[in-house]
View 1: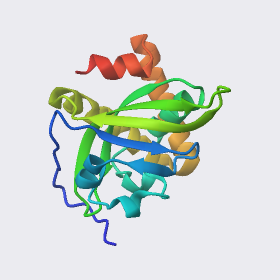
View 2 (view 1 turned 30 degrees about the vertical axis):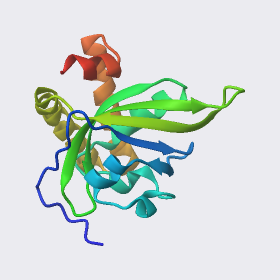
View 3 (view 1 turned 135 degrees about the vertical axis):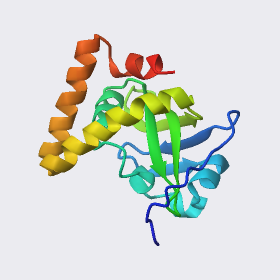
View 4 (view 1 turned 90 degrees about the horizontal axis):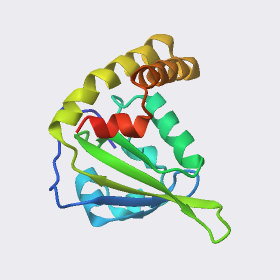
Length: 171
């Protein structure tokens, strides 16, 4: 499967929600028809695969590190995410990720609803994501991701807001 980037952006309707569920490791257990339509994957191609199947190289790994830390602590998280479709197109979403809990309070998976983001929010987040990706690529590996994560948390600290509040302030 050729996953080369096309530079084309895929859009979906403001009243459409991309929905998926994963197990605690991020393996897809449910994908709605909108997710399949926008990503270009069939349900069969998505189920049982890691959610990273749609990861776009312009999405900083440190942002996912922050998301995973948040949701593994049982908290919900909002994030702007650029994803890659099966054919190499891309699409932006405002993701809302929540842990799914068992009756005893253990995390048994995650639920993600993604909606169309505000264009001005995407335009505001692109320069930040580019700078974080640049740090990651210059240093490389886990050290690069950690350095970019440190930069991201420094930016949030300087603004005096957690990531969720920062994300919501962009719209």
